[in-house]
Amino acid sequence: MRKRLYAMMSLYAKITTGILFVAAVYISVFYGWEEELGVEILWQILGLAGACTLGSLLLPADGEQEVSKKSMLARIVGYYVYVNVIVLLCGFLFGWFSFGNWKQVLGMVMAIAFVYLAVGVLSSWLEYREAERMNRKLEGRKRS
Image (cartoon, rainbow, N blue to C red):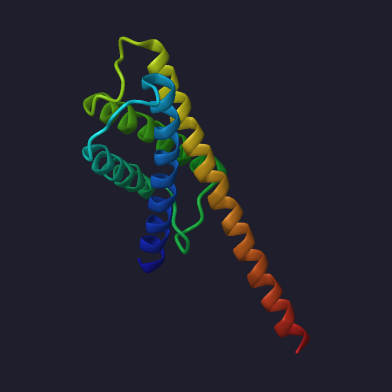
């Protein structure tokens, strides 16, 4: 349970950072540099990141039973669909874009894909580094 909570907090931070970066680019492209925003967008971003993080419960956590490749792929696709639905629905309700403007919708879908991939790659890289660090420690203990 503790590992799951830690993993979700880490994922939340990565998702929030990704959303902030993409929002800065998206707002600049579609609304211009002079756009003035209210503080509510910060709460919207934090809430959206939380909702996206909750969807990660679809994915297996460390220490859970192993899942097949097929099952893992289905879970990853399910999580990606969940993230798309949540972000598009919330983005529309928050007034971030209009479904009537296909360029904005396409931009939003591309932004979702970018953040999803960036968070996935970063998470995998960090897990790889941690595994390498642990392997080096184990090798050091074997030699002792």
